[in-house]
Length: 240
Image (cartoon, rainbow, N blue to C red):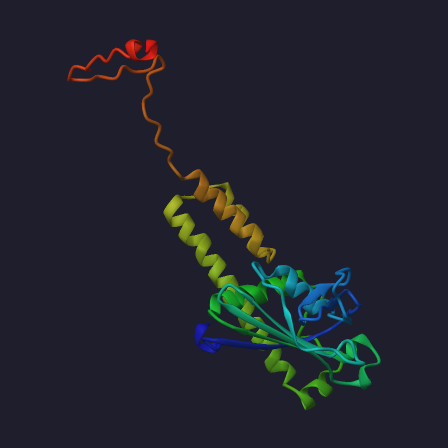
């Protein structure tokens, strides 16, 4: 699986299905929620990008690389999560941008393959549609990229993430033994629920930690001192 994927970079194309003015950007170009008081203009992110920002852990504040103009759904932003650099661009590919489905996103991830695959896995699991299914397949293929190759690229990332999660489950099984949470983790993986897989494995790890309790004398203990303690009478100094 790893030989079929670029070891450092992922580029995937996604169909936008829904978009609204949920965001804006401030004078420094940072992407903000619509309600932020510093916003100077609106940004129509769309369901792909909004979901991506929700599922990626430890994400810093995205910055607009290409600010929207008259067309608020044409833009580009970049951000970072751990060792993964993320950039997303939005553009129309058919119909002059009259409908939301006229738009597509290009998602570019740079960093460790396992982390990139996990981001794609979580994104697809959280979306209500398959991002590689384009409203105008022939239009996108003729202008940007072959849709069949793009779909296969998405699926390879998903398979890579699923293999990594399954390997974590099997490793935990060998190290800690079988238990109910192993089955919970397997069922969560079958449902494409990576966070639930990790929670189940974390519970197994926590339960396997042995806490060493030392013997404690309930009546306390007496400090043993070998040498005599010199006696110093301070009462004279106090009287002076």
